[in-house]
Image (cartoon, rainbow, N blue to C red; front, side, top):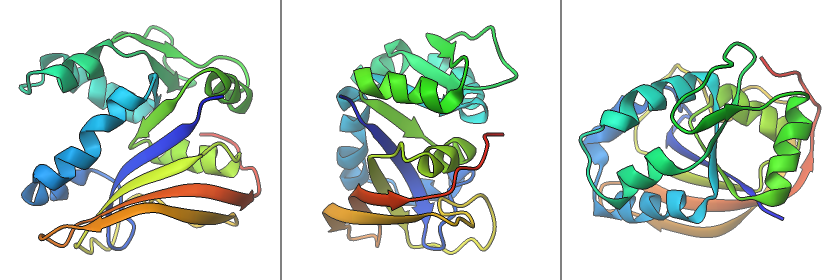
Length: 186
């Protein structure tokens, strides 16, 4: 059985939307934490908005090397009700979304970047196995949050953590227990 790993850039107040604010903090420590993610996953699992942004950016991304090649070549599964003709090695998840994702998870390791609405859906359906968070020492005050108002309760076990010289925290949490309500997607 595979697992679903949610990998996010997060402000200190939980914002994950439009993470352009992360750029001044990028360093070798963050790169060493982030780079293995795409090589450990069998496929990306993305929401529509993140898919559209990535599909527009990655094929012509200025970065060169193995990471770019992996991002462009790996399969992508997209949670969308509005797109049917996908490019960039992507397929839409058809039928019941929770069942479709659970079936994918049974066969492969899936990595989620961004995709705030999808992450909320995954959490609500007990489909997240691990969170890999890069927590930045900034408070943004508004924007889509990783932990939006939820009725869910989850117990997380800290697998690893590191505080970098620039104040960024690298943390990996495994989900050990969940008790949630199940909102619909979209």
